[in-house]
Length: 272
Picture 1 (cartoon, rainbow, N blue to C red):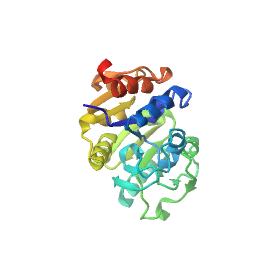
Picture 2: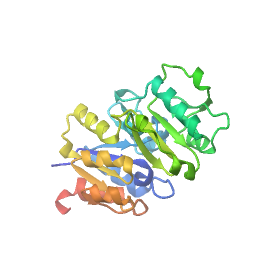
Picture 3: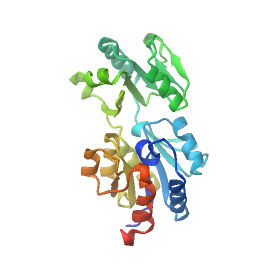
Picture 4: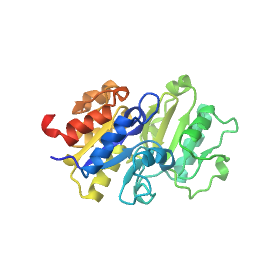
């Protein structure tokens, strides 16, 4: 079936190893858009952290363009209108923050407007994350956190050795969707949150069958959307689990693998 939607992970997929959006990738995406194909960035970042790439691709500030953020917690338009959401509750935050203190691991939550931490000795990785996703960082005692905050994701964030050794108790691990998306942090989300679930919801909203969806990624948090899409594409630099489950493998992100996949499978499928 003709590809109508292309879901693209950002880090390690859309961006090259220097975290750059290359001219070749931009050209390929513009060619796909000209052919009537929707390009949907699917990321663990909030909308603010996606904005520079949406602007570079001509997808920003358009109510007919879409993005999946927070690893699938939100499916929304690039103007910010939320189409579907799966978020944590205040009770979830209280339990997770208490466990973080017990485990002596830094912890923060990401909301649409701020990144909050209850750690007085703020982790340098939390500061770095705040800068990366363009969200102001706020210190707030756990007891003073506003209970009505929309909290798409919570993050245990620390030195690699601490994260390696961190094991959530069964009562928490079974209650949430837990995924390690970086050597320095583990993300915790609503149990129905993942990129695949959000992609399915967006495809239904757009009245596009999943057989007409292509998804590209490189890490474990991309597995659900790669298996959900009609055509799942692993990057050449993807981990072995992603390559094993994907339908096909493209070039690495250093060799414009996204552009290669767009031309081969979406624009010239007869040549694939």
